[in-house]
Image 1 (cartoon, rainbow, N blue to C red):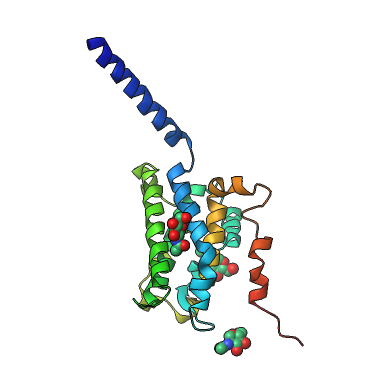
Image 2: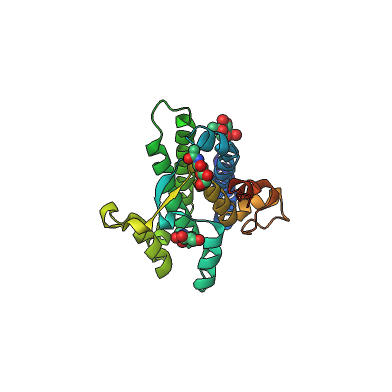
Length: 221
Ligand SMILES: *[C@@H]1O[C@H](CO)[C@@H](O)[C@H](O)[C@H]1NC(C)=O
Ligand SMILES: *[C@@H]1O[C@H](CO)[C@@H](O)[C@H](O)[C@H]1NC(C)=O
Ligand SMILES: *[C@@H]1O[C@H](CO)[C@@H](O)[C@H](O)[C@H]1NC(C)=O
């Protein structure tokens, strides 16, 4: 009997260790990848919910820093030596948390895009929770590189103190385009398996994102 319980303990312990190991080793925990992949697939409907359901040329007022694309990521990587992915991921969560809240704020309760926006926001918060859980809390107390911190500070500035020239007026779908592209760039491990030959941080649009060029048609001259 005693032996049996010892064995059970040992086995339980081993199992626990086995379960822990992948969590400790994986740079991005699998649960978070699942959450991000679900968001990514939900975003395939962004044109319908965040463009067709809105008035033509509808824009949302955002901070200059909230226009956050893969090109921003490359620029930051160039400017800052040894910039950690983790710092960029924190910035990404911060920026997009604000964006989803802003989008939701302009959608009335009974608008046909309300449920979509609310679900995206809820899934995003879950992913953010998993992101926080997957790093030791000290990691979040560590100082960010100055340039990254400056961006965070500017986004949290009180609205009244932000000069009008620092606002950008951006269609909600464009904000979600940036959201998706920068997510795929920063959490490449979660997405690269699907299509390894595509550079997820590339600034040139892949075929799938070809809409970008259609979106700003040049008037014939
Ligand atoms: C988001 O994706 C999940 C999982 O595939 C699905 O169950 C859900 O209906 C999707 N939501 C929207 C709004 O597309
Ligand atoms: C939308 O914006 C485009 C490009 O700026 C402009 O040509 C068009 O007239 C606008 N449409 C409406 C309905 O305001
Ligand atoms: C990203 O770059 C654009 C210019 O292309 C700039 O307006 C914006 O502030 C940058 N965003 C961040 C978060 O650095």
